[in-house]
Length: 453
Ligand SMILES: [Zn+2]
Image (cartoon, rainbow, N blue to C red; front, side, top):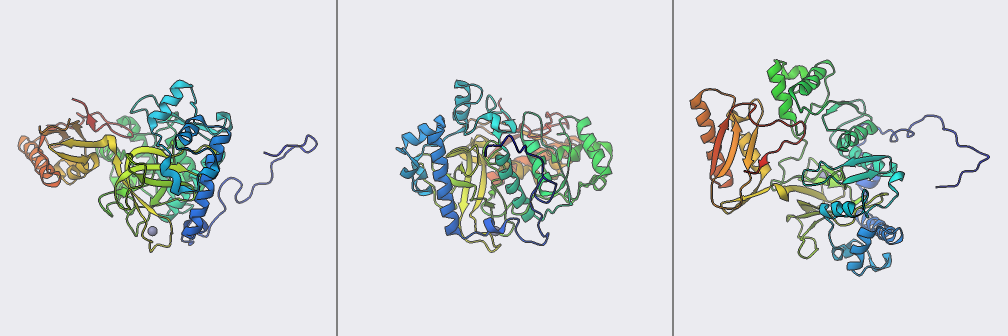
C-alpha cells in the first residue's frame, strides 16, 4: 500500500468498464482469458515456479507457522532451497484436520493465515460435517482470483453476460452461496439466488419464482430432485419453471468414470477448473494452483491417469495453502487438448469418506447412485435413498429407497430390480428396503446418503 498524503485526500474516480467488474469481452471470443488459458506450457511452468518461491518466501518471512514447520521438516530454509514445483513432493501434506487442530490450539484463526484476518473482506466456514467447521477468509484479491477462475469456467460452457442463471447454495456462515452469487455477478450474469429447499415451503418459493422469471440456464445442483419433487406436488408443469432439459455440465461421463475436477473446496480453491467438453476432465487454472495426484505414502505424484490424493498448492493469493490434501481422489491428464487450452486436465473420483467397502468390493457412493438412477420406479419423482455404512464384511449391503407407487407388487418388484442392478453393475449383494415417499429426511443442499446403523 502506498502512503497517502494528507494534502491530497483520495476521491472516487468516475465509473467505467473494469471499475466494478472485469474488462468487457467480445461475446464471440473463444476463451475468457486467452493469455493465461492458452499460455505456452513452458512459460506457465516458469510462472508457477516463481509464484511457488514467492509463497515459500512469504511463509518464511511472515511467518506462517503451520506451513513454516512443514517446510522445516522438508529441510527448506529459504525460497532458494526450492527450485520449483519439482521439489514440492518433499513438503509434507496438510489435511483439513491440521487446519482444525491449528484453530483449536490458537483460536479462532490458527497459525496458517498469510494476512491479518482484518485485511480480508469475507469470511466463510466449512459445513462441519466432519467436525468443528474451519474458518476461511478472503481478501479482495483472493475473491478476484476466484471470480476470474469462475469466469473462465462459465465462459467455456457458453455462459455470457446478459444470461439469467439460478442457484440454491446455502448462505450466512457457509461461504459457498455468496461466493457463487458474487462470481456470477462478476461475469455479468443476472443470478436468481433462491433459498435451499430445506422444506417444501422454501422449495415452493423458488419454483413459483421461476415461473415468474425463468432462468436461461435451468437449476442444476445437489437439490435438483427436491425442486422436481415439489413442483410435482404443486402441480406446476416443469416447463413453466424452466426445469426441463436438465443436463449435467459438458464432460460428465467422459473418461474412466471420473467427473471433471471442478472444485478444490471453498477453503482452498472453489473454482480450480472447469469441464473442457471436448476431452475428458476439467482444465485446471495452473497459473493459480499446482494441482497434483499424490501417493501419500511417498509424497510423489502418481502416474498420469492414475488416481491419487487431490493435493493443491494455491499460487498468487493473499491467503494460500501449501500441499493441501483434500482427501479426495483425482487423476491428472496431460495430453494436449484440441480445444486450444494448454493447461492439464483433472478428473475427480470422489471423497475418500464416501468410499464404501463390502464383500471385497470398494465403490463410490456416486457409483451406487448412478445405478439406482437408471431404475424408473425409484427415480420418479426424485431419487431418495440411503445406504447403511458397511463395515467391509460379507453381509449384504443395506439400501433404503423410496418408491412412489402404493401397489405392493410394484413396490416389491422395484426393490428386486434395485438389488439386481447393484449386483450386475457393482458386483455386490444388497438387501433393499422399500420405503414410502417422504420417509427419508430431505435436505436443501447435500443430503445425508450414508447413515450409520
Ligand atoms: Zn480442452
